[in-house]
Length: 436
Image: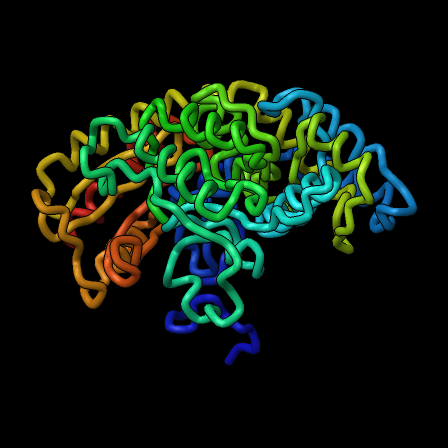
């Protein structure tokens, strides 16, 4: 019997006792290749000495100090170093304890920006259907995945949603022609219909994460979206919680399209999962407007914590030692290898992604893209087959119509060796085909 309120109450979970590199070992001695980096989190690998040493060193310096009473060297150093790689000018970093807190902070920053400009009517946030931005209420309201929202619908409904940039099931009637213009026109129409004096921000992941399995937009999508946001003074928030810190083969997902957001959120790979950490970063322009206004009414007990900043700085320096390039190069090889291995698999509709963020969408019919019924539990069965073979993958379901749809994702640490990558490719293909 356990007193833990489990996240997987229907299964007896093995007990993890050690982790090193890309491998996790359970109490029975079985080793698992961490093919998903947990929840697409671990980027520098498990057991990295420099990160563990940085955490221990910071704990010997300070443990908890309140951020309105003190700053710390760790927070100052991290902010300076991470600002230099962020895709915005003169970035200002607000550290928090994870992705949901980062999104909540970003939404409030957008509101504070408009309040400082005497635009108090701007309160609506627009995001995309089938998106995910976190599980706190504000972040969940911005999220557009129906199964996650459904239990809490009485508490939601303030924010709006437009079509996802989802090439495999694009809603543009003329797809694949003019998709970027179609998406931009949809966003523009929504802003105008509600009134630009009512819309505060647009938030989206540069590449859709878990809810759509690494769905990459068309190359001209982001430039069109940016133009609409700028024309209406709508704050553009890039949710880089999953895509940031090298996951897509660039430092940040928006780097692929030279986008400079007004606000950027980070988490997951910021500390490679070593300690809970994330941040919202505002551009210097947005920060200056907020600073000149009535103030930013916001805060968390564990915001600006030195432990997270120290771990983040150590991870940042590990990534700078060639791991971002490794993510891009290895991701290209794995994506190509999976497409080749699964090209004739009858249940594989699409294999997509950027860098080491790769999604496999499963379908009942390849021609019509008809999904499997949820009762078939295809994604769960693939994950179980992979676990039996000593491989950990990540899954998502319900993206097609709120119930049906199966996606399996890969997101291993960037420190994966060539031999380990070959093992990942072999075991993933076998698990998919076993269920087929």
